[in-house]
Length: 132
Image (cartoon, rainbow, N blue to C red):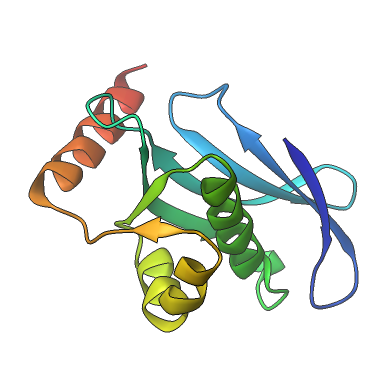
């Protein structure tokens, strides 16, 4: 998946689903390939219809361009297309869904609050990725 967007400056950006690393992520690139940020997630083995988003980061030199918002919106849109329930452990995803959850549901999206098992899965995923 690769999707073209524009940031707040009107510059083209690309958002890509990256499953080639220890932790899967949606990445956002600018200037024809410069990685600017990522939204990390894990798909729980025990719940194949869920996606747990746990960390979103945009490099400070790209701040103010709306890249984090583009990442969140694209990841959520993709979750609708894949019929996944979103579990927002990441504060940015949680805030977005708190503010726009009704609209997200109206578009066919689903989400639920994180549970202790989700937090344990994130911790295990991050620890295992560090060992890889």
